[in-house]
Image (cartoon, rainbow, N blue to C red; front, top):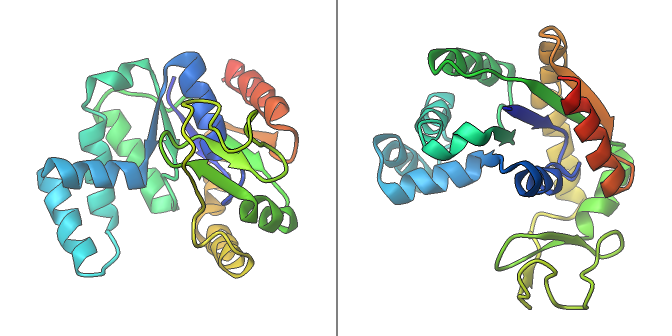
Length: 216
């Protein structure tokens, strides 16, 4: 099964993607991770992306699509993929449709994790991750079982994103609503959109996503 997780910053896309990966052996495809991997591998598209980023520019849609194209040729995607943070705009969604058709792949469902904007500032400002494995935590909602020790890998190194503050979060939400939210209408038109309540407890969101995908 190939799916897209939609939702604003802090909606829990990364957390739910990791749960799906552990449960169903799906592969999470994050634009940032794919770009870094392509640059490190020195692929043709990776070299183009590297040049743009070193010059301080924004990576074009053509380069992003090229990176996704390369990644979908890897053998591990046969178990299913989770697009996280991509597509961000309607043109990217249209390009993804074309790319998947070229590879005889299907997009089975788009899960929209609905959240309240006002709650996102608190949620995002309280989150942090394991510096070793990337497991996500929150000061109030999801603390490690043992204080200061990652549940998943046992590391004691944690980190917070510098841009996880109220002012930056507000800016990111504004950008999301301007560019990414129109994707909701786009995917409603395809009949593949499934919406879940992202304000519920993590386990309840997981159950709702499982139910939504079962209906896909």
